[in-house]
Every structure is written in C-alpha cells, then in structure tokens.
Length: 196
Image 1 (tube, rainbow, N blue to C red):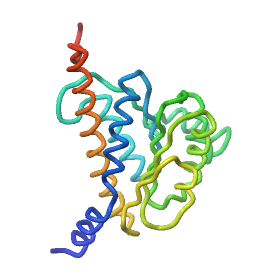
Image 2: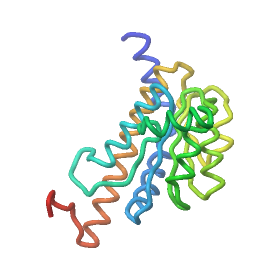
Image 3: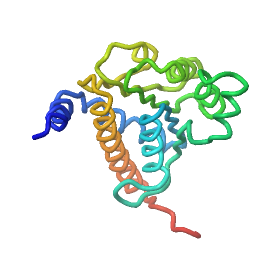
Image 4: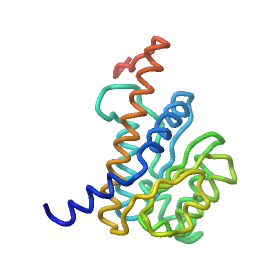
C-alpha cells in the first residue's frame, strides 16, 4: 500500500470520531428547531465547508427537508467587500455577527488551526452565543482554545488532515440525517414536495 494511504488509515483509526457523532446529534436538534450552521475555512478547508453546507441544504444520502447551513466564504461579493473595507482577518467574523443567532453552530475547519480569520470568527461566535466546533490537524494551535470543542486529526500532513476532515463531515451528515428522519417520523413530518 502507498505510504500516503497507510498514513490516512492510521489517522482515521486514531481520530476521535465519537465526538463528531455527538456533534451530529446536537446539530440535528439545532437545525430541526430552526437554527442554522455557519461554516468557515480557507483553501481546501473552504471547499470542504461548502461541501458540508451543500449536503445539508440539498441532501446527503436520502431525501429530507432542507436544513439551514451557510459556507461563509461562498458569498464572494461579501467576502471581497469585507476584505477590502475591514481586512481579510474579518471576512468570517463579520458574517458570523450578521448571520449567527444564539444557539446556532459555527464549524471551523483549519488544517493548521492557526488561520487568523477562522480564530477571530470563533471568538466572535463565543461572544454572541453560538456553539463553536473546530476540525484541525495534530499540530498544536490556537483554534481549540477559542472553540467549545475540537476534533484533531492524528496527522500533521495537510492532505491527510483534509481527507479525514471530509470523512468526518460525511459522518456528521449521516448522524444529522438519522436524527432528522427520526424526529420527522415522530412528529409525522416528511420532506416537502417541490412546488407544494
């Protein structure tokens, strides 16, 4: 087996997946009650942030109602306006302040855990009453100290960390889907048909 795949296997085995399952159960409750998920990250982490929100707003593996999730890098007009007027360090924090409400969740994705704009977003989330979670790598960093909970991938390789982050995102979505389906079944709700 190629060394990269061997490292990926080891990182998956050593990463704390149970916490992500806990997050999924909590997030499902937030979303079912009308709250929202905000997600931020740079570069590859931005791509994974958008992947996560697409799975929730659209669908993951089975049909269900759409869930409120926003990737904070994806509104390019807002990002460029904020970066131009306030600096790139504030591109996520200003959107957290605009879109976040107490009880919502901010998910911070950072392979290094040292991205200033992600750290400031987490600090802003704490200030206004959001729950904040971080997915990072094994390198010691500042981000975990400003988030409510963190899952560190047991690798210092950025590519391995990002690959495991994607697997954890899929795990999170799977748990959210299961919980939403269970809640909808209990209340007699189902997905709304298009055009209904």
